[in-house]
Length: 399
Image (cartoon, rainbow, N blue to C red):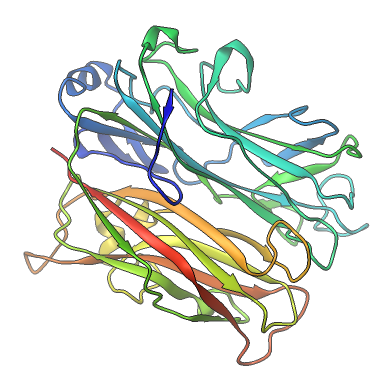
């Protein structure tokens, strides 16, 4: 049974006693007896596919829907906590897929050329095997996300991001799952299709580089298992820190904070969850623009990275989400001006946040940058941030 999740984007939650820090992300303790004991009292256990989550680079384009589906990310049983009766399994995910090979004889081309716009779909399943995508070995636990990623110029999206809002599944009968409760895994399954697709035509899980290689670390798959009541606080802001974003030769030099919220007295074991959306228009620009966004824990309301204290005290080096994005276009496409971005993620605080032995506040910042596509930006070119966006933050206190 799927019940209502949180609003706006992705929701994750975790507690301290059930996780240990590991390279690549927060992961649950492999000690199953300890997990079972902790499940008797209120807790939130967490697992993530972590950094560099993608387990494949290429996704073949089928000529029928779900004809060549593949697993793009997975959380194995060694990291996913045991599921108990009454637990709430909360899942979230992001995956960036990119069209490729639009030109002949281009080093950047990967696979066989195509000019059509493939439909792309993704879903999250509970599974018994690493490569399981359907059938008796899986159970879908999140609504399928889909779009048609536009390939032809000048309105080429190139990159498209499928984002899963928070989904909550109540574990009523653990013995009816497609896996043993202590041996389940989560798979993020993706597919691409078009009626004119031929063998050798692919989309990329990540993004293509000019030298013909694939750049990844563009998404994550996460799960939280909630047992009993866990205390939390919710914060929301719709106040824009920046009303516009410069189009810079380098995206990093033009980064701006769109939304920001202060979080006080963070303690070891706290979990911060953030979901956000913003709307940007490129109406004043003559060209399509890449819009890239990520969410970070920061030391101030205008900081565009997690450098310094946030990076030291939080999991994931203080980054709540990976940075990904898409080309916003003037003409018809999956992302037509004005363009909506959704982001969501979570981190765990590894130790009390203090300066000079006194509690110190930190901020959750939504950071965005823009790059011109197919041309050079003029000095003073800017994207404009429209109202109707927001940032929602939840803090979960362990114990």
